[in-house]
Length: 168
Image (cartoon, rainbow, N blue to C red; front, top):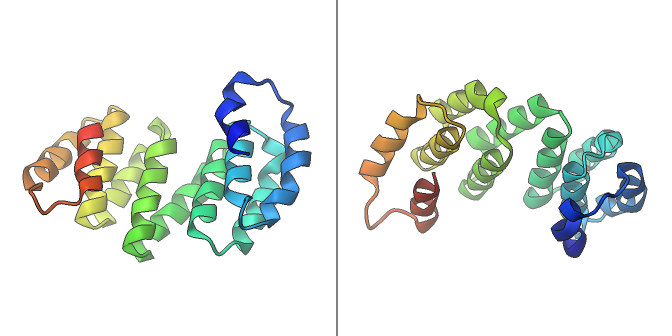
């Protein structure tokens, strides 16, 4: 699966064929996330129902994030944004960080208002990472938040947070 994911952009595979091959792997916690990622990247729009079914069943945070990303890539942005927002508000520190990384990976211009809403609700660490995602999208409203956040970084700041700010 990893090789297929790595080479997907170079291959011209039929999304329906991929769905038939990968759908059984969505039921396995060990392969669900990577199968979902491939289906989303391949624009397998017929996979939406299977992805939603797997999202309702999986307990793994990594799988949930990959399923949400796949659904967002397939046009179900509202569901993904709502769920990631919920994770930002109610999730553990690890879950919040994974949600922010996911947002950064798939956010587009159409998500800027939702990202601003999340940025207002998020703890400081995640707020800076969301501001960096908005910066990458070219949203000038993120500059002030990003600048204030960068001023507050110090030797005690988590390495992931510093790297996110630098990548912004």
